[in-house]
Image (cartoon, rainbow, N blue to C red; front, side, top):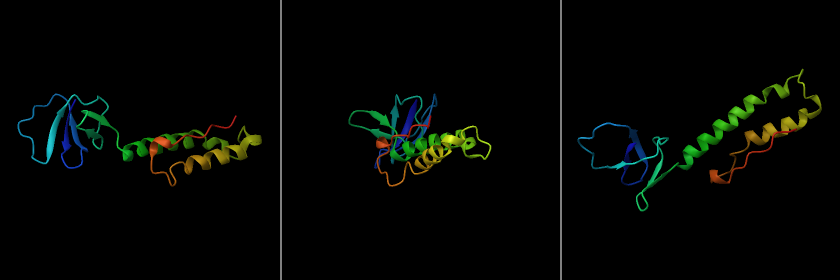
Length: 117
């Protein structure tokens, strides 16, 4: 994989595979050897020539996981749920999921709550 990276911020602008590059704009650098799962918004560290996800992308991943966990547990809050004895525990779990990014500035510190048994 190859990528264009903004010089001033080291943020990946675009990613491509197998394309030929004739001209590189002066505002970006051309980097080869990017990871296969890279996407726009990753951060490039020119000192050690590595890529990492930006915090914004990490938060996007966390929210996507949170949203899926909420969808997967929707049934626990229905009136005819098969979990009436643990409905309050599920309600607390779901609220913890909703609040998981609240006030957090470092996505690497987030720990998902455990699903009620």
